[in-house]
Image 1 (spheres, rainbow, N blue to C red):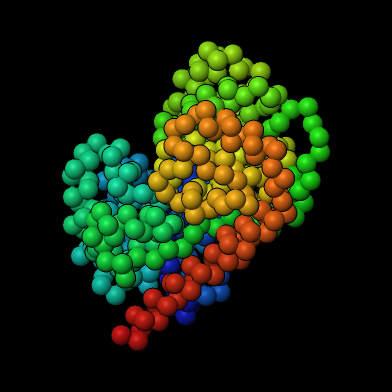
Image 2: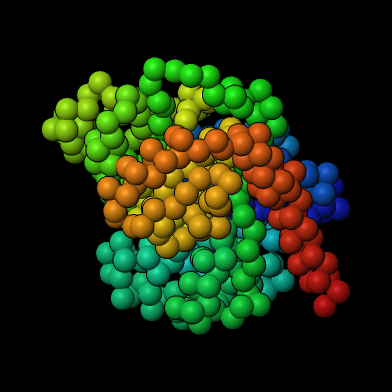
Length: 370
């Protein structure tokens, strides 16, 4: 530990990995943009074996604990906390939050312990191996966290209503999106073209509902190309569906990409098929490029992002209505400059990162006053 850093607020951030995912991207954005004149930042990655995101800020220390499972990490976490002596611990995954909450007594009381919630807990827990046990543990121990930062009001209400977390132990701060390089976005004025272009950026897993998006576009009679960016365990079944619907020349599974929108910044629509979402970063990225969104109206923060100005919501699981919504959207004169401006004003790094820093600073100052 650098003694000189004690003039700054010592922030210790924990994340399971830096692999491809929304939570991991948030961690990278926070670390690469936080004010290191005010904060001394150390990022602790439980397993940084195959990182997708890079921490570019040189004065952000990165520690790799080389542990594959959260359940085996407590000893090394405790040792790291003792060595780094942080003022604030910021933990950024549901199961990691729960570990810190259960073992709160292992860490000095003077350290502020903040959990960042990346999902809708009551829904996400249904995917756990022992759902009832996991729910019980959250209800008993989550309140041991000093504060829980939620991405959306829906996520906050879920914790308060379903797990009896005191409202004053929660805060809502949206995730940020990079908008600085969007001024040259190609999609500001759509030129006539022979085929419409759709894009989805998502993990290829069941809860993302890619299959129902493919079934929706199969109902269209207009010429189009649909690019699906992402990777996951559902790839083979999705490709089989594409083949069965004879969409091989229209729907393309393109795998993971560091810059998923490159070459198709001018897409006509972003399609989202998720069955639930905490607060999807991909919708903010689409907004930063001025791309309108069509999504199912599902639990989570999607409805806090989409308005009549930037897209439309469709009754959940109604693929027929989704296809109609696509056609209607293509006939709507969306103001793509306006979509970009709204996204910048609400979710840019210049808005969200200072808001996050202010939260940390206020907690630190309250701690010193008390």
